[in-house]
Amino acid sequence: MRPELMIEAEGLTKRYGKTVALAGVDFSVPAGTILGLLGPNGAGKTTAVRILTTLALPDGGRGTVAGIDVVSHPGEVRRHIGVAAQDATLDHLLTGRQNLVMIGELSDMGRAASRERAAQLLAQFELTDAADRVVKGYSGGMRRRLDLAGSLMTRPPVLFLDEPTTGLDPTSRQRVWEAIRELIGEGVTVLLTTQYLEEADALANRIVVVDHGRVIAEGTPLELKEASRSAHLEVTLAQPHPDAVGAIAPLVSGRVSVGDDGRRLSAAVDASTGLATAVVRALDASGVLVDNIEVRQPSLDDVFFSLTGGHIEEEGGGIDPGDANAARSAVDGDSGHKLEGVRS
Amino acid sequence: MTTATLTRSAAGFDRPQSSVGVFGPLSDIWAMTRRNLVHISREPMQLSDVTLQPLLFTVLFVYIFGGAIPIPGGGSYVNFLLAGILALNLVTSTMGTAVGLSTDLHEGMIDRFRTLPMWRSAVLVGRSMADLLTSLLCALIVAVTGLVIGWRPGANYISIVGGFALVLFFAYSVSWVSACVGMNSKSPESAASFGFIVLFPMTFVSNAMVPTQHMPGWLQAIANWNPVSAVVAGSRVLWGNPNPSGTIHAWPMQHPVEAALIWSVGILALAAPLAAHYFKRRTTE
Image: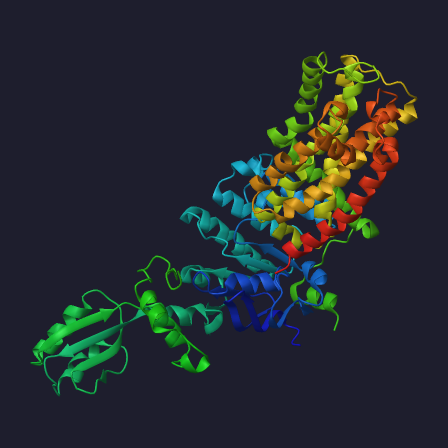
């Protein structure tokens, strides 16, 4: 065991009936860092979190938290973790303060210490005014913040945040982000799951991309972002032309590859406005006739592909064509590449 | 490998020392009990089940049926009714256990509890403790209402308390059956239907509200062996109130206190482990 790893998943598998939720997932989180587990709905993120937080038993593989096996010593693991689940797990009939105090007492903190810690967290999450109101009347953002506060009651060294901002408005999301950033400063180890590239980029040190219960890519946010910035250019010529490659080479970011028939050129490009026009002009100036031109926006599988260095298939299964097509149309422009629509 | 050292050196955190030690499970039960008491106080339906309903039922039954139902062997209807109305209220209010547990399982709150280092069965035990405490309140309201409208027990204090304890113990054991129902129901609403489909008929087909002597023969047989009849007859005997069932030859009617205790212990011995089993099954994936 490498002691610096606070969370480790080794070959985790899990199936629910006939559905394979996890098909062998490996990742690890060094102490004091945040790992973003990124993937679409149904990718297996929540299942991985449920196994590591002792809520579900894996069918195979091994999970440890703070070096403790989650299957053989679940009780000991629970003493080291804080969990903010996807559906805020709060008692709607208790007040915000009662919720926190109850969590503290059930964690053996004692009543006085629980009250003190609750007051402190309510202030930190700007919930003091609402502290003695019943949670039923809280807004979505307030519930998420209270849930996050609940996961911090015992000052756990390891924190699991399962899609902490899904369904929140931008302002609420910012506030949750700020709270998570403060935790980074305190040295907590965090596993964060998210459907948003943007969120993983804003918070995580490293990102593991999962889909269909497998890890399909891994990298730093920077690597991921660069991969998602590049678009794909495809030009179909009226007939093969010797000057065509030279004409568009200055406009693309990689090598221009030529299809077997000599008519189809393709290359990675930096997505920018007016690119198609520039390509047409350059080809026209060289006397090349163009039948068709297409700038394809970066898609999920482009990101996956570039991160895995083109070895998706070898790593087992990869992305099947139907899903890849769905993903292509799913990634939207600049506002937080949400990985939706890959699975329905 | 020492995990404690690892945790601290790796993240610089120190868990607060436990201030409860070996009383951990007890403090967990107490925390869960208080939570459920807060719930009942904030749910108008559940609250009225144990406050307004016993008051109304007691008054309505005495004034509506009182004149129309002769008690074989004599005695006033209010003295006959009180044990029955206590059983009716306590037994039917156990459906709160089913609804409460079903709600917990469906609202995801159970996942929070399962990630805490608590004694897991405190969820169940805390629920039944809260129900027992509200049953005490309910019993108190029935007793006071009864005294106001003319109920007079004819026994010593210990025997009277014994009569209340007999009904409370039975209702407590039924609440574990209710817990089993709650953990197997698809929704809190379907858990509530347990009360109407099982608990209400069970208390009505008994000697609780009317003497069984006027029922058709086949129904009499069911009523005489209904555990509710034994419990009600038992507390009538302990309170020194009229007990027309005493002339019936079925064994439970001849030995109502013993029969009530056997039923309660038997139901509890079956339902509590079963509830724990269902709970484990519902919370394992």
